[in-house]
Length: 529
Figure (spheres, rainbow, N blue to C red):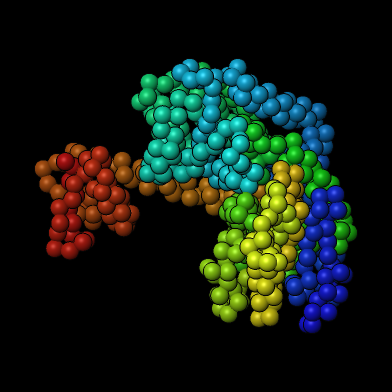
């Protein structure tokens, strides 16, 4: 295809939302001329399913739940007046509480005011707030935000070291819908201990975002925490960033949550359009279907050419992969659907993996994210005619051309800036694309049975560890091999798991397990000591 032909294709298929300054260019996706017409019927069904979802249909049949993240930015669309009021009241409460914190009306016992936020959460309870904080944050923010987003002790130690004596000025926000998520609970327990070690009352520094009556809700009330904000069962974690989950830390940071909500609301309105040539979410879903053959046969590479959007690919990994990675379709048929997502940022990608993208296995299609505005203020010339931003665009267009020359498909998503409104629009765009694509491939995008299976398996490992420790403590006289211990605790087929657990216990002195070298690695003996 010549450059002139590409230009004509660009004009024919360019899809955008003028009010948001956003466009989606699909000209370098090699779909046939009749593809959009062939997909008209499936897309109409997808639009119908989305319309029913927004009106309150049970869109998550496994859990018998409505799916209402679209109501978060348009509460008037909620199917019940009570829900509309809850949403509006929560946003108002987020604003009022944040204002009280900033003004010092809500303050820590041993400092003049809160200056830091420690967010404890995992998955959607952390990835969305992290994206927002990194994309929109500046040195002038009202509060700095830190994260416990894993159950890694060393990771938590690093964050606590950064906070140092400022822990007395730190407001901790714990986010968990059920309150039973172990990673979040562990982070909360570690945070509470850190406060106690500095002579601080954790409850006077703590806020919860959780379901009413949850384990966390009860714990917060018992500990006289400062405040509790709601999480609703009709909002999934990966689509919760525009609920209190994301709005509270963003508002505490001093970010424009009204702008984010407005951008998402405007994108929602634009992507209800049934003419796919005027609907970037529909066009994106169709390109995913074309690019992966509706079977996830190729990966989706996200390449934002903007440092502030570095975390976009990580955020989209959960949104897309947890939503679309399903064993069975809505009819119960095994389909093993999914769409793998990875990415970096431009032009770092030029020096990382573009070599393989251009000349290696052709197992992907890319989305370039172009941001028109380079920076606040005036850019200097790094050469006589060029700014650093000129080079950034040059690398984007050059990389895109280099890939196309080798038959690698790509889309280009162009936005005017990285503002709160634009970020809200991007979040809404991808949420809608995920929902529409899920309908095209007939899966439930709103449950995550594989995640629950992993949690159950982890629980089984920890129960096995309890049995191993009990056995070792009850028989301190001699050491045991992993095979002997597996048999002794009634799990003879779990020898590898037993061996890995024992290795970990022995590597951490505070666990009270010692190792005695054997003839080889697998003859190592373990004992309490």
